[in-house]
Image 1: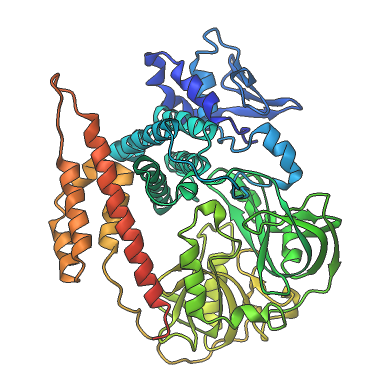
Image 2 (image 1 turned 30 degrees about the vertical axis):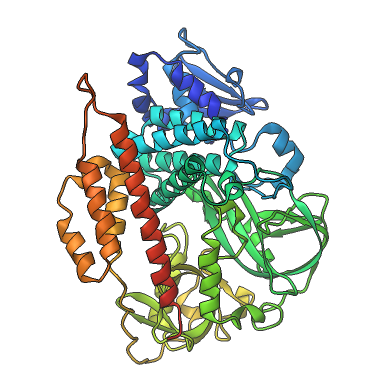
Length: 577
């Protein structure tokens, strides 16, 4: 049983109310979460800390009164603060959830809207909120993940609450994701990736800089507020594929992609609190779209005629009761309208993906990162490859998740061993220079029991399903890429370890970047090292907080350059020449 989400200001207030002697023990108390006994009731959740102490959460936990403890020190007790610090972050206020109804399926279910009013200048309150978030983010970079415990997270949640209150949803969303990734890192959650935390910190500091400096598009810097789903008219949809969904917040589910008559991609998502044991079967759970009830796997193969359809700004379909829908016959990937997706040149598909990355995460349309490829399977020491006529070299196909609960790795290994030389049509997710995550494949030689295609994260391929590979020419080598990984490595080390990661000399990597004709990369790396070594003290001998802010700004400059350089290199790798 999972803990219910808690509003940011509730957690922040509980941690702030702790005496200093208890605050130093908070991280140890949170680490004992596995020993708690969680029991659900009609009104909320009861958490038995031990034989004598119980914490009761009354859902929704959006006020301090929603969390009580039976110990004598409550509400300024360690038990209550630990439970609130371990609970997911509430991203939807009660009145917003009521307005959206059952359509809000995940914590990331955010729709976007543009205000029709002129964009005002940055206010003093917005500047103060951005500064507050920046200072906490600077402390995270100062000490790394190990030093970003529950107290630091509570400080960031307090800043999140302030950003929400004054209308800075983009900043609040980015900072909330930082908290979620920090918790996943400290719990050693299987789905955690250091690169994701690094990206969220870059986004958070970027928004803080845009607001503090008053530059760029102020409307984009502020972001857009959460709202429900808008009418999109009548749609005749055809399933494309389905993939399991597993978030760092402890939610599991599935997402199905569909296309309409204009080859526009829509998504249907459903996620609930769960663990790794339930993610495998999530795609087989039923999902409603109006009057139609299908499993996600069936949605990825069926046709659906929806009347009065509703969707968010990023083309996520509502599966509320207001939608009227009936099931129709599905179509294969080689039939219209899906076939048009594979006729778009790969360079244009890659450009669509890279352009979407410039948008806020909540504004990226469904399927913006999907790659539609035709080719012949191959394999070498790099794993499964796909030879396509549009590129001079092969595309590397890797698994989106290496969790053995999901069949991704096993399916890709079977294809690499027993299906080389065979033609396939593939749906992947762009992952880097000439590299994709394999999501689904279709081929005439696959058994009919798969229903037209194989969802690599849902269906299990057997050896008997494959006709056997043929001898192929040795695949070409990887396209040479600039050694930007050297800069990426140091940026991620600062996030993981803090300032101390920059104590070792980085001159060797800087020289390698110069030798590769990347003088700007070498320059920002050297400046990052200098900022890491710079320590000043005030008149009383205390370390200056300004040094942490300086390190954060220099780190942001290096991260911004790294993102732009990697984007340019990635775009070049997907060109046909």
